[in-house]
Image 1 (cartoon, rainbow, N blue to C red):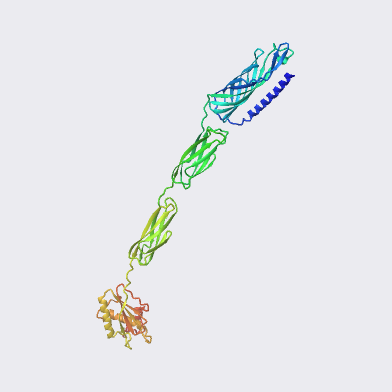
Image 2 (image 1 turned 180 degrees about the horizontal axis):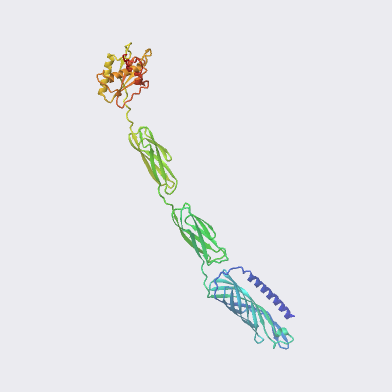
Length: 536
């Protein structure tokens, strides 16, 4: 009864231990392989053992079941060779001893390792030799098996600390020469024990952990001000199962990042060379978890060509006091907005709005006046423009006609007749014209409204011209130099007006005389003579 009770209790303990170990192993399956994988892992450390069974004690005829106690004294060692980051082949040795018994194991088998950042979780299944040496019995070598696993904490790459290793230890032995056939469980005892280990793990070989790196690319690398740039960052040697964080910055333009891509707005950026920086980090990793890259780009300012302007005046030549319209045309080779202002003039006064101005020449001296303006574009670049308006002094007014003399016609019978008194007056007129060959005379005939003779005013003027241009005058005057007109003075007179060269006769109350009409009036003193009838 004692033997069965102990075996049942041991099976329960071992079953719980194995279940707990399995749950622990599967709980970390989601972790990625973080640490660099060494080729060889050598463990050396302390080992505690619970043999987990009973052996015969006493005589063959009277054997007694002896439950093996815990053996706290012991050492353990193992050597694991990794074929891949997960699978390896392990050779294991363990030994424990006390005053009751010694037990050693030597086994080999596959090992599986789940590697996380700074923490490795492993499980192994080993088969080999289980050697048990009780103090009262001879040593026995039996078939052994080990099933379990543990956790290693990485201190630094060559060295790890085995936090614990928990294994189920199986051993099958034969003590048929020590136990009576009446006690079959004692003749072939089976050990279902457990062991715990802790110690150091030495790591050898394997590729060193590669530091993460980053590379930045820009498209395009050279833009004009205001054009966008797309930046892309690519990280290497990061855990592909982790979500990376990207931190973007730039010393030129406004940058907006979206994971591994960022957009750079160069609006308002001065021309020059700038740098964009991306910092890539793995938030799930504590160390060796970030990399930085930079890329350069160039921003070019648009060409800054000053505007050009031309101006014109209409009219280009004016008399003093008259205005002239000034028009200026300004264009920018870079197609930016322009304005025209700052109108000035070297004479007169100028006032303008936009590209048009008016020059007022009142009071200006004769000669050229320069009108200027300034064209300014939206960037502050300027261009001058000007044109010239010539101011002319108006010619003096033509000399006015002057009244030299007049004749009266008192003869009632011949009211048109030039009498001697009038002839003397007309002789003076002729003398004046002879002395001034460029002058001419205007004879204005007048008539009293009470006079009944028709066209006396015109007849008097024509008769006076006939005297000047005929043979009766002292100096005969060219008829083309004598103009006859009628007036409205209402007197029986002819007025004699001298018109200098270039002068005009502008008496608005006079009318020109058609001499042919006057001479065609019947019974008129200046009418054409009638033809006499031939004698029968």
